[in-house]
Image (tube, rainbow, N blue to C red):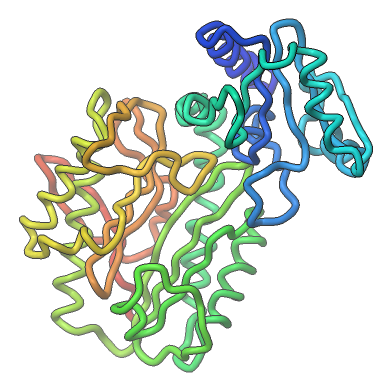
Length: 366
């Protein structure tokens, strides 16, 4: 699918959104929405920024790229390419001119946006549009996921006792960048920090026996997530039990991701799986993941989640039991759950769920 064909699909979704809300235009300002609408472009400078350095305005009569004079050349050359967007640029020291331009093109108060506090805030509606991936997006996701899975596992194989968590984070980040992606999250835990923290930002603690590597990597605006554990000199029976139970919960999460079900129903299945495998309260200690695409978790699963699961959506479930975690990114296809971060070169755990065997990552013992 060409970018023009993909643009047309997304532009039709925007047109329906405008009709539904009786608006003249929608201004896209967030990195996630710019990447989505530009068919894989990336319009960020700071990695921690949710706001893009350029905006896209879609109106009933035309579509526009709006950026200051610093950003416009790169946006046109590397982000939007030949997409049918009319450029409008302004001086960096006159940011108010953007809204004045939007008011001029749409009419004051006649446009919506993804900006918090906008008079017509369409952030949730735009999320719903983003998560239904086109065929082209799914293929980009597969390419990105496979490369990131290899990067993560190659980095894990380079871990040695005595390395600090910060050093491991550097190795992981280098591998992800070399794979063409950007590590927007890199969490590393050594030994007892795996038990103590669900979000272990790397420190100078040194690895003795076990290390956990977690990555969320962004390419084409799409974010894949995965976790791997490596151990030295064997692992305890208790850790084996916990790892196998966590893999089983993860497999149940994948099986629960069925078209037409709500995320809330899938979440209930995950909670039940924790209890079945002997760790009933562990789900209290961390969220379980959910739908991913242009945000780490576009829609986080909770008991009250009403989002309806559909084919072509991507999921990053991340169940954890103290001391271990299971996480990959998958796309829900007509053939079932397709892992896009599994490489085939890592030790896996086979988990049968209602007649289907799911392979979930185990621990690499060095």
